[in-house]
Length: 265
Ligand code: SF4
Ligand code: SF4
Image (cartoon, rainbow, N blue to C red; front, side, top):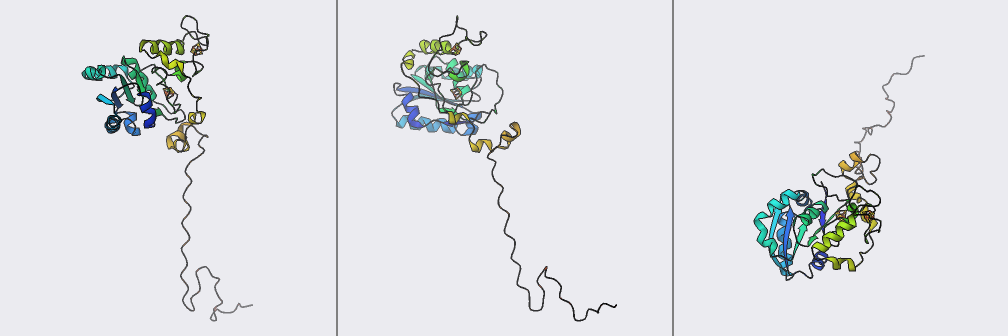
């Protein structure tokens, strides 16, 4: 499971600044479990964007957005609403956003960040990958992840070493930044490359203490659990009731009884 959380609403509004109309897609898988992109959050986002002056042409919650085949088949009944939108907002993890961006011929923007959980990931059929950087950059790169598609995880553009579309580090791989460039060109978004991204916040590349405290993290990362919840302090010892007159307190040494026979020598 990939854990995601919604981006700040001002950030989402900024992505959609030049788009008057948008379509919202959510995910009934991990994003619903995370409380970031299920049907409830899709409806809430629709309300907020409408109040902010946007025309939401439609919404769709898909069982799993990490499957391109499922994205395409689920949106078949919504083709007109998607066509009427200037952009699509995806409330889901990094994999889901990449799958939507690969399936819909529109600018696709991320409504969520995928939170780092220290390497706990599921399996899925597609080639898309997410390194849980906690600050999803897919809004800038046309829905192609610069962290996982580029061998050097470059954020500021191509290194210049690609040859015939292949990466200089690994010739079996496509150059991630050529994929980004081609996607932006195809969607009319090349102006994104006029701006530089802010430097990555490396603190978000590590699991948060609350994530590291999860039992599953501990099982999969033995020796790395640093912030397990502390056990509660032991309850205070019950106060002993004051002994009645003539009755010794519990544990007190026994007083010699006047009736105890003297040791016979
Ligand atoms: S930019 Fe890439 S690694 Fe970061 S959250 Fe998005 S898909 Fe995942
Ligand atoms: S050739 Fe392309 S994918 Fe490889 S490191 Fe350079 S920019 Fe990244």
